[in-house]
Amino acid sequence: MISKEKIASDLEALGLESGDHVLVHSSLSKIGWVCGGAEAVIDALLSVVGPEGTVAVPTLTGSRELSPENPPVFDPEKTPCWTGLIPETFRKRPEAVRSLHPTHSVAAIGKRAQELVAGHETAAAPCGPGTPYFRLGSWNGKILFLGVDLRVNTTYHGLEEQWQAPGHLQPEPVKAKILVDGTWRVIETRIHQYGIERDYLKTLPLLREAGIINEGFVGEAYSYLVKTRPMLELVGKKLKENPRYLYRKTA
Image (cartoon, rainbow, N blue to C red; front, side):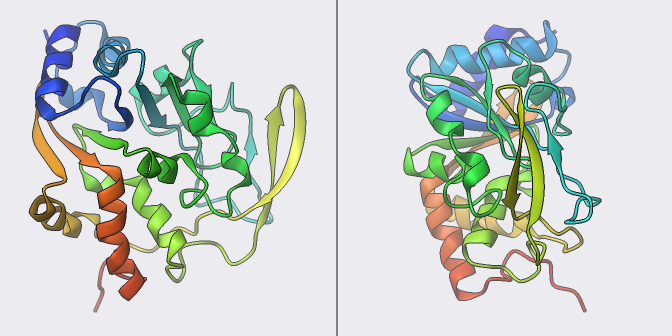
């Protein structure tokens, strides 16, 4: 069995440090047989970043069925996420705070948790400027891919929004319902359009060459730790030149 202490030690070896603000994409099953399950992984993450740090997870709820005719309805306390057992367990913790975006919410625990998630629902798009995904960049935060790889990098969607990648967002806004302090509010927002295949793995050599990604095992899970700001700058230059840069080329 893999202990919480082993996970914490492996995270430190990967480059996660006390005081870090980190967004965690994860697969519990890839880590191996963890003593304590998802709770132990969360405890390990929090122990490494310490009281001055912040841990966040994507608690996504969007789907291809959503549209102006079928807008999102989001209760931050009750609406489950589809991003895995670790995020679903994390968001239910009493100390966790969850952003109010109706499709791309983030849950956070730590010193700057409230600041990280604040105002997400007012951003122009789900993952770009004004969202927790980009806010981590301005804080010199990190992104941990725990047993997963860059194919799940939600922050890349933010770059697609920033540089207006064609077809990434639905052409018309939706009027989503979100529950805020016991009262349903209607907000107008943009949401994703599904169907375009991405090739996010193509950026891995760029990140390696720039020296902004660490790689190694956490338990049995091959994992990556990326510095958010330089990643946004490096890959953002590619999208500035070609907004379709992250799209998979088709014949």
